[in-house]
Length: 368
Figure 1 (cartoon, helix red, strand yellow):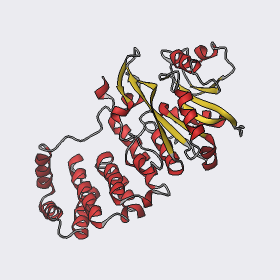
Figure 2 (cartoon, one colour; figure 1 turned 180 degrees about the horizontal axis):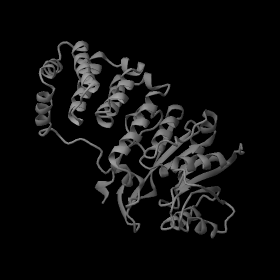
Figure 3 (spheres, rainbow, N blue to C red; figure 1 turned 45 degrees about the horizontal axis):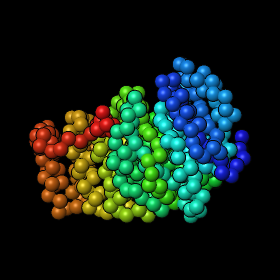
Figure 4 (tube, rainbow, N blue to C red; figure 1 turned 180 degrees about the vertical axis):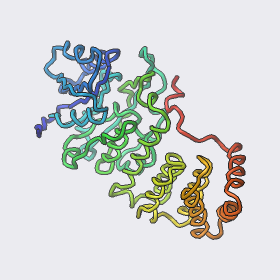
């Protein structure tokens, strides 16, 4: 159903799953806004607790509750997106808070800056009890304004949580943007990256929202391997965006490095598919060679390859040497691997002991 677009109204989406502990605080923070022209779409995503009952206890016509079987955060956001009627889109998760001036500050900015289709602000992390911790900006790059597509493709630390973001809804609808329901970790990064491809962003230098850090944050509940898989999908989708090819080579190389070396080590089939992409072959030749060498190295260290995977590692060492004949490391590893894959692996394992640890640590560990 296509909804109307009411000028000045902010449509706030709130996915909620077993959120009874915090959702009343989130609702109260919206009711306390100095800007009153808003609607809230709460999507109860199959909660087994009192989430729905708490929402229905609020007697305010601006609050709408939609219930559905559990389908995940991204699906809940898409349901809310389809039911919106306002000119603007805001994000308030059931465990987070708006400070009283959030909507006034962000709506006011967009109303006075027609050249921007989106804006974001600063805020604070808070603990389970609501005590303020580090500012959002302390864990971000930037702030950035205008065309920030390259910065969003580089990494997800431009905004942090989407709670601080306000969008004009018209370009989102016109482009048919939505949330990828196959992504559990990072659906907001994927969605907002798509937004930055077509929208100019502004920044309001004010702390206007609170992001709650607690034991049940989805980023803490999902194990590192699954988290890497979801982030890899975000990376692949960014590579497929129309403007990716126009980004500086350094940025494109960084994206492929993160995808192939950090997120998919030893996943030979996925890596082989990615290096066959035209976007990979468009990278500088020396960087392609480096990535082949690193993939082979990481694949050898992740598990002792056998059969055809052993041949893949050999092919990648050879490919690195062919693309950059003067790379002595690729040449040495290729020769050593031909002599003895086991010896090559042991030597690389010893070398790795003296290198900085890599991997997907708890992204909120510094806020404990």
